[in-house]
Image (cartoon, rainbow, N blue to C red; front, side, top):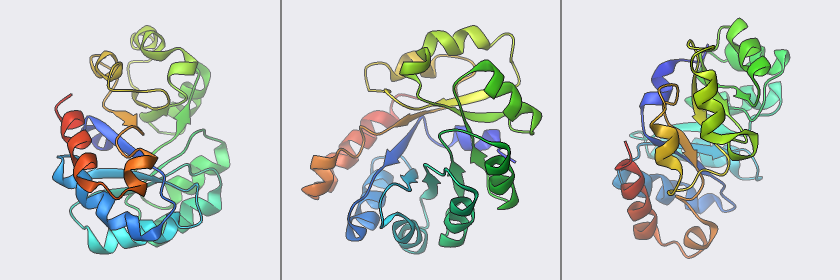
Length: 206
């Protein structure tokens, strides 16, 4: 089952896309140095699973998770690679069952009240709200806090340093997902100090 504790680790969960395996460990160490000891490594590139394994082995102080889990098989592969939590952009019954079967905490993705209720029926109280800005943003989450009080969210998609605080101020938001912490140009340039600086600013949003 998913667990509310996952939403309380960091105020901003770094959502990271890596194209080079050799960048995995330095990125993770930069995030830790900046005060964000968690990373959602998306399964969007051929090196993703190996990157999860490398981080799990070499940066044990970071909570490494796998994101963009879209098939039951990926859930098992991510768990086998050493992921300590899973995140999906959406949720089908078979995907929910596969993530649950891994025994790892997970955040199933929802974008509507009906999807949130379906996830709640499956026993999930911590959810990813995606794509956040395109699906109604902070105003949507504020409006569902009263009718669906048992659920908390990690909104992801269109979150920026400018609007993150408006989400974090909501009672049903535990953290936000942010891709701005590891922009492609900084990763390509291997500017780990700059990434640590972005992480430091995000950690202060709590």
